[in-house]
Image (cartoon, rainbow, N blue to C red; front, side, top):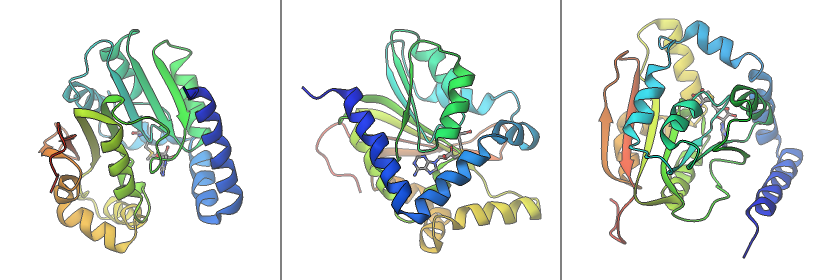
Length: 240
Ligand SMILES: C[S@@+](CC[C@H](N)C(=O)[O-])C[C@H]1O[C@@H](n2cnc3c(N)ncnc32)[C@H](O)[C@@H]1O
């Protein structure tokens, strides 16, 4: 049987090699490494959800039970992890995944060695986990940062690693009303590439329906973020 820790070490080395070779990836990861130093302060200053109610809503919608296994994709400084951990408890497992060492370092500080959680450095487009191993996957305010066909590949990987009937819950910003913030929003969205940005804004649910069933959009209290939920198929039945 293969050793999961050895597999993760291999993934870590593979990422280092990619960083050395690929200018694009290296630049992106360095950007997030640098951002990690101020990320939490930046969010605290600009978010309309200072108490983290949205993350609680996301965790609540996941339906996670004690001893369940959850993955938080692109976890950043791990702000989503405490809400998930409150549901899975010490018998379950919450994995926070990100490709930035800087972000994961902040997440480690936040969690302070709490049991029931693991931090993994890997790419969202290539998850180092076996098929069907998670009960739920969350992704908060990171989906619009998956470049090019990254969003599509990440969705396929989420579907592969979810157990049949498991949920994927994505939270993202609605189009802001204030002009400057709206401009920044579009710049961020355009990092996906023009075609994907158009597709995402035009009909996000259709993109999700290619991978998941029972796709629905959930309204949030602040009205500034949206949550899209989908389930992994229960059988070999085709998704749209
Ligand atoms: C805006 S932050 C969001 C962090 C966190 N989910 C939150 O809600 O605060 C985006 C995160 O996605 C990570 N990220 C972006 N592209 C990624 C990829 N392809 N694979 C893994 N992580 C990625 C970045 O390193 C960063 O930590």
